Length: 422
Ligand code: AMP
Ligand code: GLY
Image (cartoon, rainbow, N blue to C red; front, side):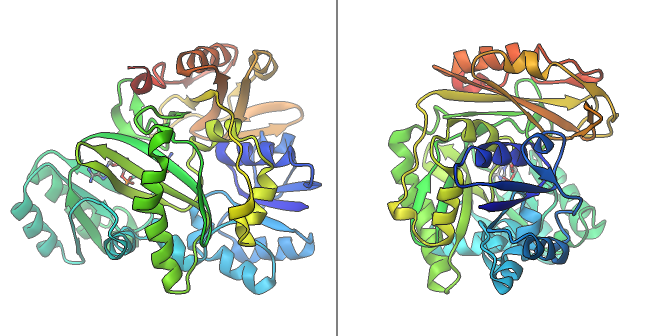
């Protein structure tokens, strides 16, 4: 098989690393890729949102399977364009990708599918949204409808804070057209978990639970980032409860989309809040989480290319998903200043020393490789990931790996996994 992966993060390095282990995969291209994917296949300089160029490349190179990593190409319709070209794509079409691309769409589907989610209103007028905030009171959550790179959500502790967020999104257009509509919703209390499943339109099969660390600072303080580390499984969502979440959330959503002849194929990711009243859905993503993908794929013990192909061909029911029993944990190394402005171009070394530790793999995100030298190009630079017999063992190994990496102007959280260890 010839595979084209779309994206350039740590998730895409992990996808390339795992797909390369598949005996049926002959060649992997990554568009645009990074310094890590360059070690697993061939990087191709095409941007993730250039759908015509990606489809043309896939045709020209006789690609057998396209694997979009991030949400943007899916929301822009890469699956639909590849369908037209007759090239298999592991991901949902543009209609189903609205589950992530529009929070109002996701809320409507959840309502129709009777999936537990926070009580909400959808507004396109600032005055009506403000009146709703004043009626419900704080704490309350304000969300820009469209893609906002993880920044369009404000959990407001006062009505003043909520109204300020509404102004920023709807009047000042801080997130452009993604703020033409807002979702205002009830604030839920509990611990978060990620639940990520393979779907073939009918069958849903889960990966183990995982937990991301969105805040920049230790103890979950400070502004949100793309994710500073992750581990799997998350004790807050044990394996005994996977069937419950599949029946309560995943199947009803897939059935609702299927009923409209819009089957969901690919990865369906539910961001859950485990509340005293049971699990509630905070959001859906239509692709692997980054950094959750890195620890999840280290536990994955089946042929990933075969599982993805089975999803595309509607054969997931008869395709086994084997998972290693061990725990995995990944620590993100970021450039100083991230998620705000940060320096680039720092030289990175110590990969071999880190990977000499049993069970450690260093996935690269914002990096480039030229003349044998790896340099930083982004905010999240690496995700040092380790397998261990339990969470404490995985954490210890991951930080031993982190300590072997040499990079100036870098930082990481030292407490990844703390909620699971508590
Ligand atoms: P989202 O992109 O919708 O997942 O929101 C980003 C983050 O905001 C989530 O990971 C939660 O930490 C927080 N959040 C979103 N919705 C709620 C809610 N209804 N109640 C409490 N926290 C929320
Ligand atoms: N780690 C959260 C996400 O990928 O959206």
